[in-house]
Amino acid sequence: MKGKAYLVGAGPGDFGLITVKGMELIKKADVIIYDRLINSEYLLSARQGCELIYAGKSPQNHEMTQEDISRLIADKALEGKLVVRLKGGDPYVFGRGGEEALQLRESGVEFEVVPGISSAVGGLAYAGIPITHRGLADSFHVITGHLAAGERDDWGALAELKGTLVFLMGMENLGHISRKLIENGKSPDTPVAVINWATTGRQKVAVASLAGIEQEASKAGLKSPSLIAIGDVVALRDELAFFERLPLFGKRVIVTRARHQASSLSKRLRELGAEAVEIPSIEIIKETCANILDKAIENLKSYTHIVFTSVNGVDIFFEGLYAAGLDSRSLYGMTVAAIGPATEAALKERGIRADIVPSEYIGESVAESLLPTITRDSRVLLPRAKGARRELVDLLSRECHIDEVITYEAAMPKEMQDSARAVAELEKADYVTFTSSSTVRNFISLIGGEGKRILEGKILVSIGPITSTELEKNGLRPQLQAAEYTIDGMLEVMMKNAEV
Image 1 (spheres, rainbow, N blue to C red):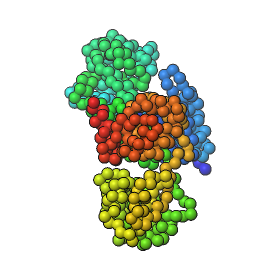
Image 2: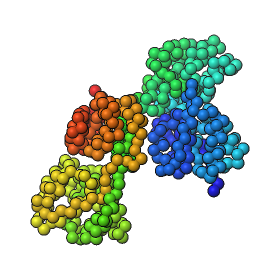
Image 3: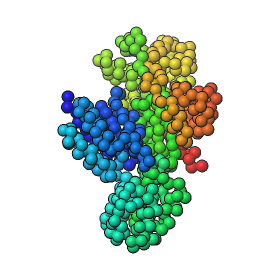
Image 4: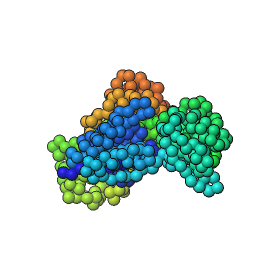
């Protein structure tokens, strides 16, 4: 089998700034060779069994030489694999992608380049600085900062340029850059911005004159990775900065939902300016013992009511329904109840409008809403998770027949997250979100005693009272609880907290 390599630009850091093609290739890759500055959340989209190889290079520490990396990409492709070389920014903008492409051509490996958004453009935009602007800059120039210390002999030419100058990888040489430009005629009053961790929730920006930027960046504690923007367009930042004005900007939030569900919460958090870190603590495992669901579907016409208590319950029930050659029409004549708006929406996607959605999204409220529609002859089907709370079953079984069918288990992930990584991420977090009792139990198990002590000092966000109770059982206090027991409710309470 013939392999192929793709040099993929991962963009400047914001999860949403990778191209559609780049993300599609991540999901298909056999091997991903990735850099230090890529958003590590991309790797969660890799398929099971994909080989992940870190080839990061920090200013003082190179995991591999560039020659080794180029050779590795070729060798993996020559093994017949689809190789993705995932690079921060754009592969051909000071990413040494050209060297890697030449090595692939020399080795006879087919390759493609997937461009990415360079931090030189995207990073400035997120700091509120347009890289060009009519009347201020009609050109821009991207310059490597690595060579600034002593190898450049064109400072005079650079100082005369009227457009925006952007130095990448130049933090170590910031003072030298500013001095050489001033010595060669650049006005010491020229506006300069240093942008650290551009486009991410960790973004910090220091602005000063060319003469004062070294001191201002040092005062702000800015280090690598940072980019340096020099020119009159920097003065527009006060009016055009948008990213740092988002309600959750700068907040680091841990998402503990199951991996296939985490993306929706993470996406919303990122839209609000937060840095979302996914540490899935549950995995949805379908229950197959004795084909209980299949038997319930065979006898579906014998039920008068069906109750769904989660989106997972809806998904798995309908999978079984479709597998039996049936569809939504099989629920005709039944009273359909959903525990909350997310479950209601999942039913609506399948053409079913829930008859009952309680005002409070807990089992007791579902039972209370159902009771007026129930007689002694009613038969209720309840497909739901193993280990779910008993209140709903207990309340309904006093009034009619109810069949509880276990369709799935919210279990500890088979490929459990690295405990050390989880604790390290927890130390840097502002908020930790919990969307179910299972996420509480499993996350505490993952982080261990040391992690739990760290967790006690974080802002814990609970989706509702049942989850809050589970936190309290484990000696933890949920500082925030959603007023509406939904993802939107969690986001709302976090935004209110961030305003304080």
